[in-house]
Image 1 (cartoon, one colour):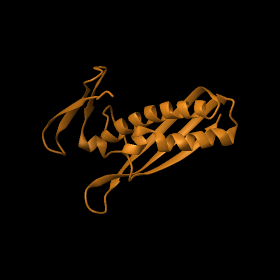
Image 2 (cartoon, one colour):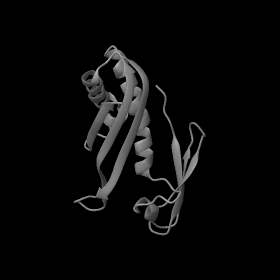
Image 3 (cartoon, rainbow, N blue to C red):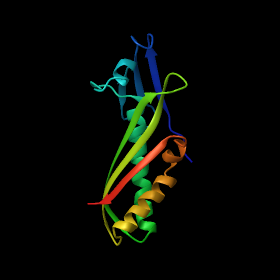
Length: 145
């Protein structure tokens, strides 16, 4: 199985430093990162580890659900997956990701609402990124429409 690689270069301290995250394996993008913007409500043109995790989780979950719908006897026509990853304080000190919320709306044929929701829950358990994030509460809001 393949291995993927990303690289970050960072200069400065935590509060005054800046970094660049490069998607090395694909070469498709490089993103700016900074801790003050990571901890702020507005990203202001920079990304964060949480946003990158959200992107990875959304893509992985969409693939897992597409397979899950087909395995359940349906045909996936379209899936819109939104993932929110929240940064919060860690009671032990510092920060942590306390929870992740997945919201999916699907258009499928061959499955009713209950069948789709069941496939969505199975996908949440089987998505490799969900498995990697074990220990973080992951909620799911799944519906057709």
